[in-house]
Image (tube, rainbow, N blue to C red; front, side, top):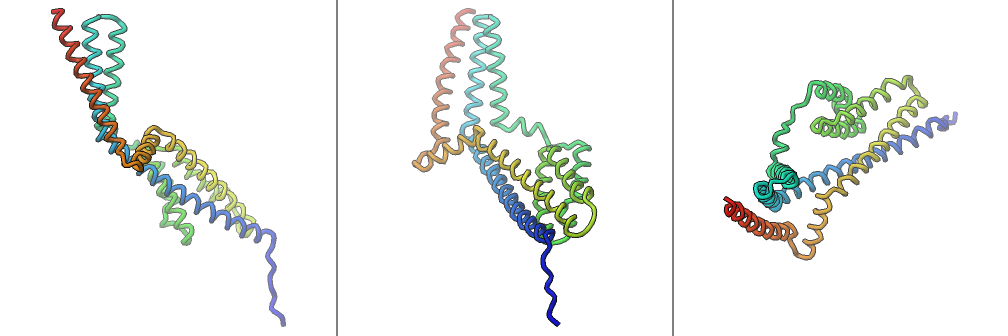
Length: 258
């Protein structure tokens, strides 16, 4: 008796196609996540170098400019002088905080109870320990990495989205068989494509930031065997020397009025 060969049904063919698309989308999502993490780390390292080499000098320069503006209030005693002095001091404080990390140190991570509860709810559903197979384990590992980052950033929107996605796929769609599985995978694919678009948008924002532009300029200078940060530091030191001379001149003016 000849062996019976089962022909694939339209549902199983569509299911195989969607599975392949989902696997491809998840691979692209993992690549985008890795690329974005590398970009964040790269810019964070460069930003640290910038503040150490140049940022502290800008803080010194802005403090001198604020002191000059404050002296001019004593010289001219006008509303415009007081406004300039207040603005200069505010800018100097911001530059100082950025250069020394005072602002970030003051904002120690102290998540509210609502954020802790939300993160626990997410982790109970997408932790890799709860995966049913190797593919799902890899995917849950990626999701947990995103959840951990969202938690440390206080990003409740991403945490809620992860939770809603899990509920939508695992609770809203009931039943067994190819049709139900196709429905679940279609939704998972839509979520993955949405997340890829979100990561692309975040990467675009990072690449258009001031620190990213400066990083690209520094890399271009390095190809010409130049150190852009050292050049900037030299320029700011010259500006500091000029500001010190102007502060001394303003002090002499004040002393002459007494």
